[in-house]
Amino acid sequence: MIFNIQSTDAFATGTIANTNLGSRMDKSFATGFQGQLIQISQKDRIEIDERELEAKTILLSQGIIEDFNGEPKGFPKTKLDFERDKNGNLVLQNGLPVKKAVASYYDIRHMIARNTFEAEREGLVDNVGNPILDPTTGKQKTKVKLDENGRPVVQTVVKIDKDLLEKTIFAANKLKELDITSVAAPKYRPGTTIIEALEIELKKNTNGIVTKALKKEGLTLSNFPRGTSSYEALKMVEDENRQGTADKKKAEDLVKDMAILREEEIFTIKRFKPFGGTTPTTAVDLLYSQPEKFRPTPAEEKFKPIWKNPPPLRVDLGKISAQDWKNSVVKNAKEVNPSYTEEEIIAKFGFDRIITLGAGWFGRS
Image 1 (tube, helix red, strand yellow):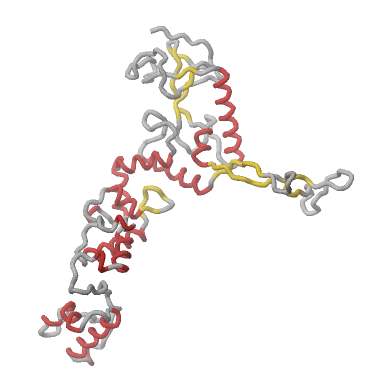
Image 2: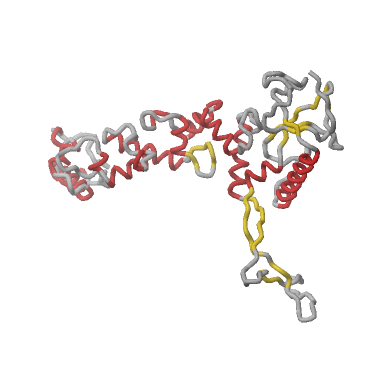
């Protein structure tokens, strides 16, 4: 195979193209590059460099820091390119270009920045054309620029989405914990964001990242509805602002809500999913609001509302008889469960099986 390099701007990575460099499995370069290259013109390379410089200027002006390699600090590599010397010329090895993973400002800009629209402003001047200054700042006063129809002239301004930036940096650090420092092809499809890359690893439970996140909050798959995968379990309790991390409050609520479902002999939430019950918490909400629809087995012809535990009852055991204690417990439960008869409440507490009072009294303080 003969491979002649005509100019330093002749090559760049991109979509696979047939440039007669052999099959994709051929290691065409001594550097171990697998695949083929797309040939671009010097004009295309200049346009790419201009876009890169524009994105770099925007990000640096809004707080992104440049590392010693001139790349955005804290972000993984985003694409494959060819290594270049300080003059911009390709670095060759055995007459062939050397592959290099780089962090592109242009790629990062698409991940964390968004177009915003702001009204253009123009400086105020007096009758003779002199600028009118603001005495408090010493700068020229401005006003919104209007078009010929009297409407504000709007301009596009690229700004970093602070919330997206924080989530992207957090995802980048989680990827580093998995020893992943690049989201470039071929490991990920071109254009994959850092957040998307972490989501891919979460779905694969790489290095047990999901299992560890659940275990940190004392959860295993046994705490979740039957048939729940590790990834689905994490999504039920995931912190909204910390991707791949379980939220303590959500974890506690899930354990509580699963206890309610299992008490009703419900061990899966399949029947709830078509109606928005994608988690135990939302399933319990549906169960409370429509028990006749979601309760698996009716207690009688007309379904009763789901049993609610009564508030704690404290009594002085030295001043109350066994029957009075039972009556007070039943009355306490009846207040929050008015649809249940006294006989049903007595049976629920097991009063019909108690012969003598012991240390296990319900409500004993």
